[in-house]
Image 1 (spheres, helix red, strand yellow):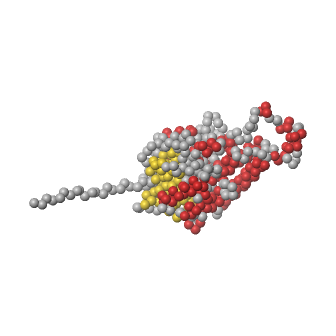
Image 2 (spheres, helix red, strand yellow):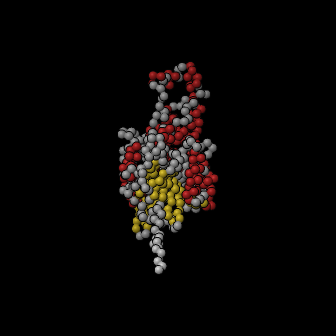
Image 3 (tube, one colour):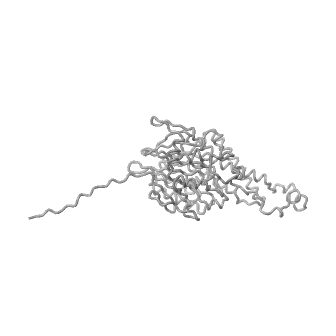
Length: 447
């Protein structure tokens, strides 16, 4: 009698878990480069935001080229959207340093703010003012060098945001502009949108920069300083004091100094400092302070032209990418409103639904608002900080990142603050979590 052979039960196919949005922050030094991957059909759509690293970074070109190679591998060479936030070297240098790799990518759209539009009268005027200020600063630095002053101090560090050697941020911005189809980016206005990346269900709201120049030029908190987090008890928030404290201080004790009025009576100093031919070599403290203040204002005003994106996922959760936006840019979001699907979306509403925040300006004192910013982010789960504290210290930026801000971010996120320098130079490693992946070149968060 034949026996039937036992059959194994047919294997049932387990449904694949749905793909989740991913945000990759590159760890290439003091600079911004992000890749957001959104599920679309059987694949993904990829958004790239900025690509740059601070002037003076060791092996900068090779490092940025490795970043772009990784982006090409992850995306299959196709970028649905490239967003360029503003004209600073640590955000745009990669468009020159890794130019060949960037040109090899198929970039479907390039977005910039209205402030980069060469056909916009207000943008042209502001760009002209910045160009004149930058030319004056470079002339001043040359004068300092001829006078024998140190050219590697805070002024040189601030000027480093605007380019290297023969190349400038304007060159890098033009290289990014050329990546757009037909070489024509889309220039965006605050309150525009929501815009969509086809097939993803995501909406992108444009928060900044503002058109109102009173806000555009407001980079610092008020004297009371209540808008932002504390630098230190009692420390004034004057533009020059914030980053250039001590830049013009005398290097020796007062007892070794010869007052200028006394020096003017001595033959040697009369010859080298008082004679008409040599008087230009005397660098007064007031002159140096003025140069420092101009450098800081140029830096801050450029930061405040940052394109700011709030990316709303189909779940309603928001990813906030603030560029280097400072006080006035943040304040301008309070009045923004959009009519969407029969309802109203506001700037404060987008902040309240933010689950991931790209921390503004590497965690500095004036690029994350308190009561009208971080404290309203009730759903915040992850903060990304593209900072390298060791590099910041070498530039004499002793409050980047700001300790009080880092502490509050850790409190708001339950410790999920991902710094680009985590695990290096004494910085604690990132917290272990199933939705966070880490490599030498990047951190990635699954949402």
